[in-house]
Length: 120
Image (cartoon, rainbow, N blue to C red; front, side, top):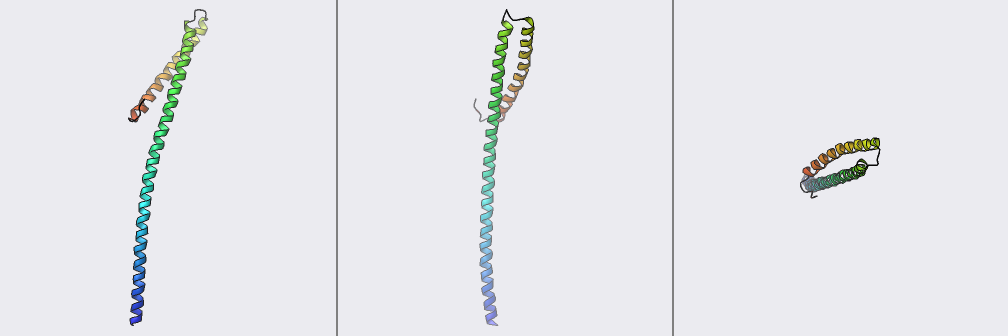
């Protein structure tokens, strides 16, 4: 009977050791998962900041382009030699652009307000 008990104790000891090793591995896997989640969260936050600056730059570019076009149309409006119809068309374009510029300014202000670390 003693050899059976001895063999059983060895098996139990071996299995206990394996359970401890498995638990250590499980802990290591959980730490790795946690670190990966933290890294993913940091990466997502960085991507979000980058994506916010791209649209902000695009909005500012669009606003500048509209303002440049308005300057061209203002020259037409002030040109004494331009036909009245041509001046009227230019005034309509300026009015439409001014509405778009106002919307863009609102969006730009909202984006700047949402990210207090932004300087510009």
